[in-house]
Image (cartoon, rainbow, N blue to C red; front, side):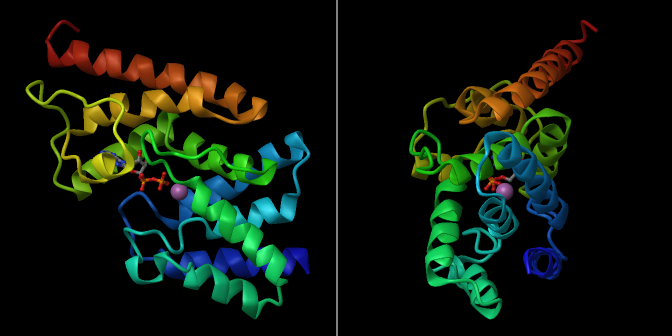
Length: 214
Ligand code: ADP
Ligand code: NI
């Protein structure tokens, strides 16, 4: 049963994200699923709960699916169709609700399962993959790669963060450099270290090239 529902969830996610290039694509979800599984095993969390929440974490995303966001209709319909208990559906939905980065309004998940999924989603926003996703998002939103006139805004609330018009380079200061310290689990903190350093090196190189000194 476990493997069937996981395989079906993977197919479901593929069908939902097939035309998305904004950074919430199918492979983002697949990477989060793999990382979340690895973290869950190491942290002794309940693996199936983590896997289902990881696979379904973006199917009712407010930006992609605003009409299903509030009640997580896509996730709930999928779980119901597979005979998942109401209690498990509630748990998975709670985890999904806690995952997102919302600036200073971000929440610390209540359960170890939620912590694993949030950490995996955040890990996919940093490092080499994170850099690629960030520039892809910027291009998709007609955002400048860098503009020295536009300064990064720190400590934004959820609504400020959502409505803020910035540059892609500023996004490193506004979100990506904050994430390593926001990891919940020891496993994710360890993975985050190398990704964080890699990004710092990248931004230093970017700015040196921008100024023509390298
Ligand atoms: P999630 O909901 O998975 O935390 P988001 O929807 O906030 O992610 O972002 C999806 C991807 O786009 C992430 O890699 C994120 O860092 C990047 N991104 C989000 N906002 C911006 C932005 N203003 N500029 C550049 N990249 C962004
Ligand atoms: Ni995500």
